[in-house]
Length: 495
Image (cartoon, rainbow, N blue to C red; front, top):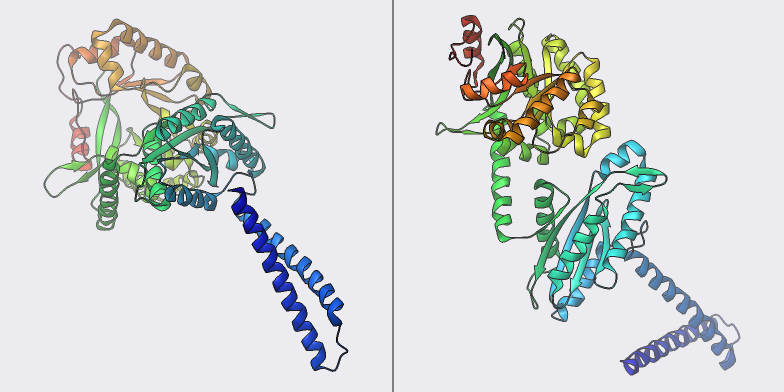
């Protein structure tokens, strides 16, 4: 190996001298053609020496530029180009490879609310942490933005890679101390492995790792997920659903249904919740849990969300004394223009803001608490109420309730169902309701389907009840009939 290197260096030196000599000869010939006195052999040597030094300097600068083009200027980590080059080199050697793409969760919020200078400092810190957890076991890269990569080769590459990723994720279970600030960011990692002599090139490797990383994000974040061939089928299915959703929006196929909420004591209707439905030609319906994540990923959520708000406010405008509840996705609330558009919708529909209530989920508050606080403050200035939906699914705490001061707390059906047969769950539900009441929040129990459940949540102190025991979700025209019909018929136990 050393002899080969010496030969290469000698060969390069010979080429440099030969080129320099040729340049000197050309200069001498040029001078002679113009009648200039020949420079002689010593002159040619001087010119050759000067040309050699100049060429050597030029080549060294080119090598420096090539090295810089393989390095990320902010973090000094190898960049995407270096990753492609390393994969190509290792594939030629027939190495077993494992690749991870690592993306920061919540980085955009840091940039938006603390500035790019602090964001850059965070990226540098993340790069240093990646160096530490990789050590000599893996090669590490910054691909751009808040995306990093780790490449491991050789036997047990997959096992080593997963261990690195888990160590990296573990570092982010606590706030990151950056320039005297405590920043909460998470990590999602997608992993893909490739056997020796795999036909997959670097582009395909990155594609698989990227799909796995997306699965980590949609699966709850702060985790690493291995690529599986089923992911490609799911991705294709998601693309097809997106195309169908776009056509459905153009054709106006989405519909709103409304489910009444009744007063826990009088059982009179006091509010309705707008529920989005996508009816199909065969009579079935695609629920929002299936297509809203697609809409959030593709940016269609803005169109859908604005349409839902406008249609619901228009439908409910003349339902005097009845509050309107509308679900708002995390992607809508992260949009800084959302409060502005909400104000325009209220103005155009002339819907009283005090009759509108927006429901948000616990997961949004945990991921983007700073953004949430600002958005909710703007929304409340219109006079619109805010309810915390799905409480009891394991995210929000009493601290969250105290910080955001919601107007209403909605107990998730899962907690209520467990509370029927489990004393611990029943105590937890009762305690949650007591805390909410102490903070002057109304409490609604969702998904009530039996008289036993209704009696339990009423005894626990719920203000409102929502569920099939009283009403299912129906179109706007049927809601108007129900409102004119008065109090629904219920069993003696529920009364």
